[in-house]
Image 1 (cartoon, rainbow, N blue to C red):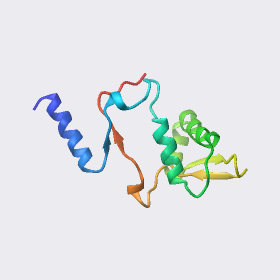
Image 2: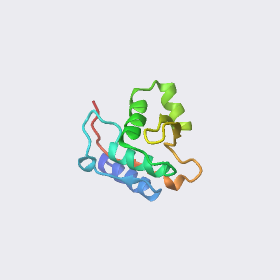
Image 3: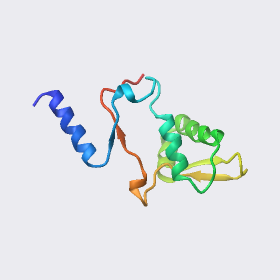
Image 4: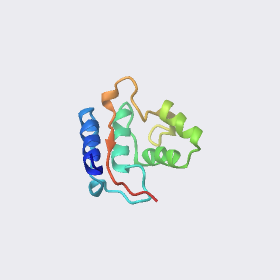
Length: 116
């Protein structure tokens, strides 16, 4: 089995388990980005649909993820990201992962992704 066949087998296996495959050229990201912002913001809104999130709220959640320590990032993934909501003026923990309804999450993978 060569490398291409192995890659294809991995792609087929992940897709059959509900993961979404996006070719690298279609990812709409720069090599510095490791979070797909458009998808991240869309899913953040969906997972926290009980409040209306502003662009500022979304950016604050993203900044906390990008600038947090390893310990903080793990806590955010487990418990959510605390954000002072611009529209409401109070702190809310925004869910990043729906652990109760796993099908509400989006699992994306690609191949040959370049990071700097």
